[in-house]
Structures are given as C-alpha cells and as structure tokens.
Length: 356
Image (tube, rainbow, N blue to C red; front, side):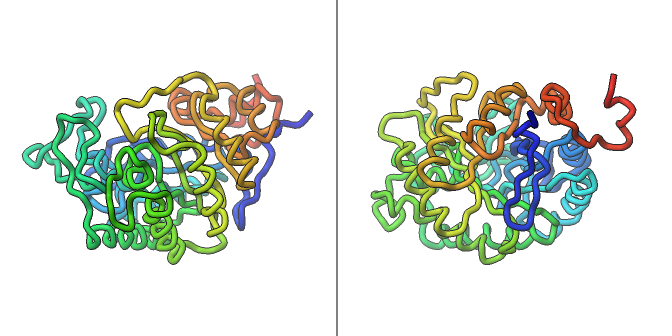
C-alpha cells in the first residue's frame, strides 16, 4: 500500500511533493531583522532532508513586532537579499519556501530563551510593546500600549508592505500568524482584548483586525500562490477563544480565499492549562476539516512516521507540521520514507547512503 504521507498535494499553482511541512520555529539569531548563514543552513538542511514545505520562522512586519531583538524581519528592503538566497537554495532542493508573517504584540521585547525569555527595557535593547488593550501577558511586567486607530492602521500597512517584500524574496507560500498569543490572536481572544470600539467586544469585532490584515496581504500576494493562516484553536482557559469560534472564523477565512488553516492552540494567557500528549491538537484540525471543508495542517507532539501517516490516511488533516522533531532530525522526511517504505528521491549528493 502506498503511503498517504508521501502523496502529493496541489494547492493553486504549487505542488507539494509530500505532506510533510517544517513548522516555523524562531531561531533568535538575527541582527536588526537580517537573516544570516545560520538561517540558510537551518532552513536549507531541512529542505535537503526531504520535507515538501519549509516555513520560515515568525518574521516580523515591524521592529516593534519582533518577539526578541534576534527575530527575523522583513520590514525594510535591505532584508530581501539574503532571504532571496535562502529561497533559491530551498527551491534547488525541490522544496517550497514559505514565510510566516507576524507581530508579537504584547509578547514583544523579550530576551532569547537561553537568556531567560525576560522582558527587556530600552536600556537592554528592548522597546515598548503594543497590544489591543493595556494589559500585559504577565502581571509584573511593563504594561503594553493600547493601539489607537493610527496604530492599528500601521499594523495593517506593515503586513501589506512586508507581503510585497516576501514576493520579491521568492517565497511560494505565505502564512499569517494569528496564533500563540501574538498580536492578531490577542485581538481574537476576550482574555486579552478588552476594547469597547469596533475592534473589541463581540465576535465580529474581535475578528476584524485579522480580516483587515488578510485583505491587505491579499492585495500584494499573488492569487495563484497558497495563503495559510495559523490559529490557536483554543486558549485552554475559561472565557477565552474556543474551538467553536475557531470554526466560525475559519468559515469566513475560507469564503475570503484562504487556502489552508494551520491549526495550533494556546499562548494568549500564562494561566492556560494544556493537556499535552501526542496528537493533542489533531482533533481541532479534524473538526475544522469536517465542519468547514477547508484544507488543514496538524501540529503538536507528532513525532513518529506512523502518527503522521494515520493523520493523513484518516483525513484528520491535509498536511502535518513538524517542529521539535525536525530539530532532532533535519532529515525527518527521508527517515519517515524509509520507515513507511515510500520510494522518494534523495539529494544526488546523498544517494549512496539511501540503501544500507
């Protein structure tokens, strides 16, 4: 029996050679948003490793939109050149280069994880974070600035101009990051959005910014290239964003032309209670698949070939995204192909190792 995980998938003009995706993972290794050889090797090695789609880490649409000073950015034209070389290399390996555009909102201006993931003040190279409401992620941290109408319009404009640069850089898939407690998710969730204007309160108001950002991105992103949105399907906290609201949002996103929902969860409040176990987020992807009829990606503690094969084979999702497991094994797709007895093409430089 042929492997479903290694079957192709066509989305618009792009053919994915299999259903394996490298999830966007922050490397905290840029300076002033600029990519360097770490990013080339990190992303390039996973393209060599056989995954169909390599999605670059959360890439900031503005300096204040970075999680940390080490985040990648694409808020100025000078960032494009190195990213072009990374995209070219990924394409040369018969893989698809993707980019995730993000704004960290109130979770911005923190140190890298290996430096404690601590809020940075201006004397430490930090900056003032912005948010839908003047409420921090942690109670003891500096309160973010609540975005006014001018600030909201800047966010929308920043996503638009960054999308234009992403096209010039050569990306073939773009993902809008509306998950993990970052700015767009902060607007979605009633646990972080306490506004009383047209961007807060009821469901229609809380999803407004996501839809306005989507429209801005679509104005620059080619219509024949795939457009993804990553969501947190639930906040894992009482009174928060939930799977029912996610389903309703995804129906609207599908109607507006989004091609795939990358289904994750959590991240908007520090008191979340996540029941982490293998496949713990897959049921959310399955529900969105079934109730919305849109392509989905599943992610979260998926570590084995058999797990991923089952997800695709039983139509729980259309793509499987790998994060930590791909850090442990950059050649994860080649390893899985051997386990599932799928005959895949190896890089010609490595072919002599294909059979033991």
